[in-house]
Image 1 (tube, rainbow, N blue to C red):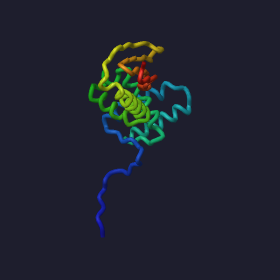
Image 2: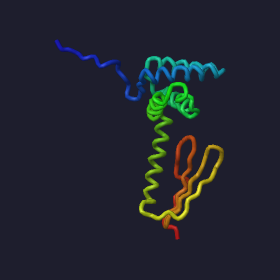
Image 3: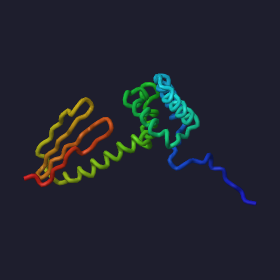
Image 4: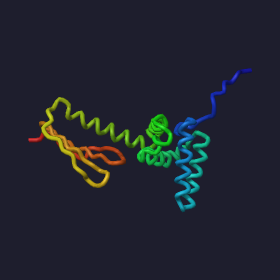
Length: 166
């Protein structure tokens, strides 16, 4: 006879596990989205997400939608105002595990890789510009290198990179 150790519910590899704080903060946000949409299919999807958050485990097919809700909640400052900085930090950590959060992290990693080309060079010129509402560019020129970095709500990216300028 062998003893089995109970380790809690089985989890799929891509499901997101939530804690009680995240559940408490997210449920009213999801409900607000659900109530705001007249589309029955969208309402059903929000209800499915709400039920998933209630269980504190979000299925992979719902993580894109969860990430979008967290992003809106964090961007408008509402989470910090209503629930405090701890809730904001907790949701930021959770957001980083969602597809939108991972895309932003990937864009930052790509930018940091491109910025390595500036190492050891003297900065000759720096300027910022607006590309359109919510999108901005930072141009950095060094001896032999010019990089234009674009900042958008969806992340950052290298807009252009020129090496060995003559």
